[in-house]
Amino acid sequence: MNPFRYFLGRAMQIVGLGIITFVVIKFFTPVGMEPLLYYSVAGAVIFYGGTMILGKGES
Image (cartoon, rainbow, N blue to C red; front, side, top):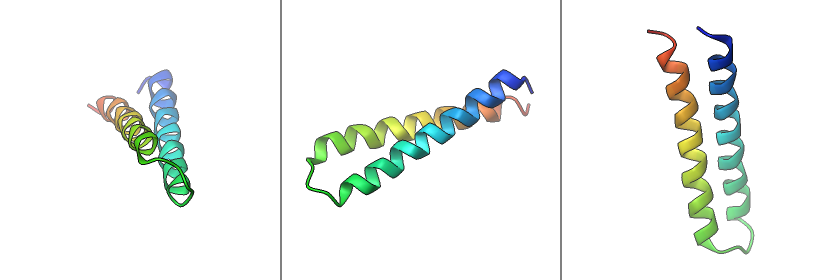
């Protein structure tokens, strides 16, 4: 696997998990639900994108 693709995919997974963790922490504070929805969708898309990049290198 190309090292650049590996580190890009892994970095995207870490950023995605960070965003999802941020959403979970902010869920217990008085904040609107609309920003949490946007952040959770963005975190899931970034995490899944990183997983796809890592998965394509195996074949």
